[in-house]
Length: 278
Image (cartoon, rainbow, N blue to C red):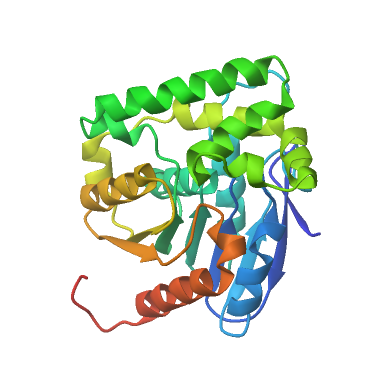
């Protein structure tokens, strides 16, 4: 895989295919650029598609040992890939990658044509909207996860899976998948802690000039829809989209629907003719 050197000690790896207006894809945790293979294949005939590996995943450099859990490393990696595109890109982030992608857009160092977030795990948005009870419930679940992850219990991954995919989801997964998720426990724990390091201010969100679409699956837990509606309502150019029959793993389970959503908005944002907001 090709790489971009961030500095003397860090590199970000990526996969690239297709020709046309650029789209940059940011996976969730755990995951890699390969998470997007089905989506990228469906977009490659119209777009230049770049899928990167976040720090600690795939071929990208791991997080430095002892580094505080923040999204800063992920933001730097995404910014480097976006900056390497021949024109302003549509940035697409899933789950934890959605948190990183939103951070990139809010920082505003690079021009973006648009932002598509697929079930971004914006837990810290709940108390900003005054949903303190919902945040406390989520915080309790995550606290149990962090406690068990700190002890190195591979089964701790099941807490996260059941929270985002629904009760019993982890138990229904094939044993090889459970084992693979358990093997990524340390990396996922760092990424999840980074989610809780984020801070959102209504004034900051209200200044986001980039057009935004937030998608959630109709089969996902209610909290994902709630976060999508909250974010779309806090930014000037936000739209919410439901993907029928999809759950949290939509980039792989519903690649066709995800690719169609991305393509539709990428084409809309490249159209200079003004259109009414949905």
